[in-house]
Length: 348
Image (cartoon, rainbow, N blue to C red; front, side):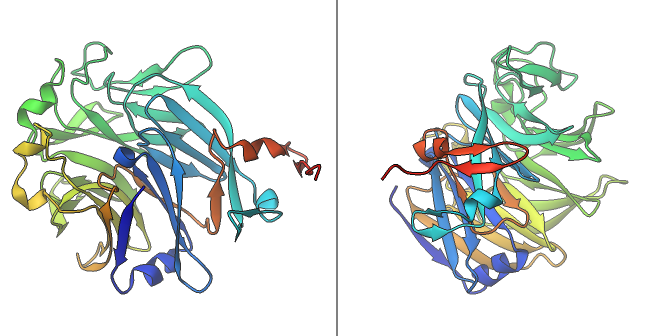
């Protein structure tokens, strides 16, 4: 992977202040980037290889990453992390592969943990689904206008948010019930739905993504406008927090700071060609925005192979982190049980 990275003053210190790691899925480049800061505040990036990574989620010691045909589940071991170096680096946290669901090509988007079980937005089959050892997926909720779960990406369901451990909000790019009907009205056909009541709360949205609850406040991204918006949960009035010059996608909020992804629009995409020039950024980037004042505080920019970001998640309290991917043989030297954790000794 060939890319150049530039940061504005303040990005490293603001990320450092969160005490966390940014996990960023760059699906076109086949990478998940783990970005954090060392003790001296200097930024560190660890790339992990996957085929088309999309949704990422972390909860407690668990981490999940959706890829083109698989869903990978990991568990963190701080004890084993502190007993080895990975690529010459001292680690405090190290994720090991525990379960892989071979889902097939479902075009999974947002992920969540529901009752400690992983669920996902299954975009190709227009539903939210769960996973087990018997099936590729099991639908647990679909928008009421979807009459059957077929591989037709009828509304481009994408975003998901929970509240108090229950399904709460979903976003989609359309409300149609035929194959890829959302493409007909890409700039104003989106919607925000309340899942418990099956009611559309807002429509005419511009490619909504990443619904997120933060301190009982509801935010989402209108990708086709390049805007972070806040929704009044009682009146459903919409307030633009900030307008950015690019296709916004991927949102995580901590300490009143919104970490927002911007993607470079695919030049050959007939769907993206319908978008206004104001969201056709020259390169991918991550912006840090003050959600109370709408001020852009800092930016990290990518040039080169990193062009399209889907998800951004802050791994809360996780620093100095590594991930042993499924195809990294090093993970097989570790054995974990509820009582103990072991590294296999080398014979050399």
